[in-house]
Image 1 (tube, rainbow, N blue to C red):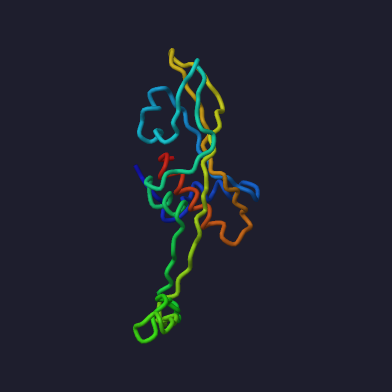
Image 2 (cartoon, helix red, strand yellow):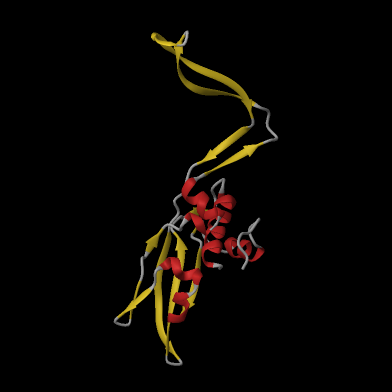
Length: 177
């Protein structure tokens, strides 16, 4: 199963061009009771009670699912090796004057030249599950589910392609679609 995309696939780019400004990344799944045991859908915690599908309609994916799920929860750093080094202040704590705390303390700060980097905070994008339809085929009940991300992406925004690729990869690595 393909895990991540390096760039937005052409079939998605073509579809996005036909849509409005606000986009939500989603996939449709046709599941049977046997699919609930599949490892891909185990995180959904799907269950059936009295012929009704029971599920959590909104959840954040587990960080162990892959690198995009981990970035979604923990955030990440982008290093910029092409930019010049920047001066960074590193605080090393309080130190005693002449080795004796009775004389007082001073703050020890050192400076280093480091690569420029950008801290990206956690996005905490959640998946939203919606039951679209339930139907019986060959004496087996099929559940049609829409799984989407809860982030609405504006196609006019400056970081549209970055956000779209992140959402696509998040859905891809968690559900393979």
